Image 1 (cartoon, rainbow, N blue to C red):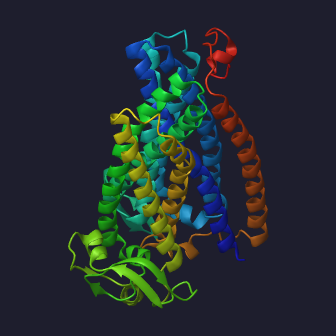
Image 2 (cartoon, one colour):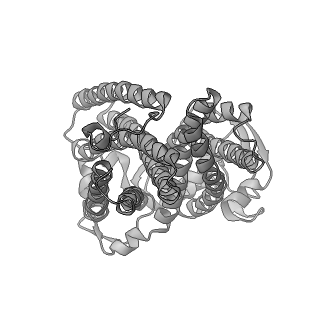
Image 3 (cartoon, one colour):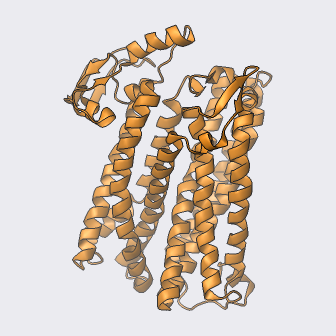
Length: 462
């Protein structure tokens, strides 16, 4: 394997691992703040226990998210130096904002929340956890703004072969970033909410800490239902936007090879094993539905991969401009299928909640428990589709991935770092997984810990 292929594998592995913790931290921070708000308003002890319990899991996710995120920064300099030189002037601003205005604020208020139990007033202490939640969301926006510039470059001019920032407001207000932000936050609420719902269902099936977990389940179910349905709507409009900005990605997502009016939505397609087979052997589809999804009109034209390839070759020069069609096709369907399944589960759970039958529905509780990991799989599929569907570009229309890799890094050097990071992440996964599942399985303490003890300040006492 070449250094380019190895560098891509390394970035993909480390980013997917990091992305386990991003939506989980955002979701858990929000629901921890929500639970503490309920405690502040009702003074009910169960909400204090819930706040401490979900806060512990949030801390594990936050710590691992920081540790794995730092590696992403290193790779830009190690494996992707030509890319860093090209985008450095544009990326510097949103990344600095993420580090200074978001991450440091997030860390500061997280420390105040941890050490503030019994030391700050209830109102001030509540404000600190909401600041943590808000900062995680703000941090996500700055990162998504930087990534969205790679999907749809705006607010720049080319100077001496490099992109130079001309308007930070254009970058931050990029339409791609706005849709990606809404989609990511809703997905984060689904991820954090499903983790809480799954753990709550596990304890309720065992009649363990029923007061805390009954309240926690009731807390997240309405949010899950709204977020699940809204995610589908936002995803639709995001697809419409992508069909305008990156038509090749959306053509590959449904394996449309020839420009078609009234294109059907493919349910199952079979083709050769080539990266771009240029056609399908079999395709089962719903007529006109893809045209409606991508444009809002059932008889509208959808550009095909072959026609776009010819257009891009005239515009950018010789080469293959289609991504790996099978990867785009199945990752998009995985994300969509899980999204619809989670929305359906959440709507059913909300209906049972309104009928006062939620906690008595054993089938629903078991389904919730087993479906809790699905948001992570959907996030993986969404990230793979977003990034691999953009290939062969690292910055769409401006910089190819093959021109982004560090020219002086050898395959052996990338192999060493790839193996090293994979082993390190494997060790972290085992340690963090054991801690996370041990805390989740044990549940909150029966008695409130001593707020003046050191362990209580870190939220780790039992």
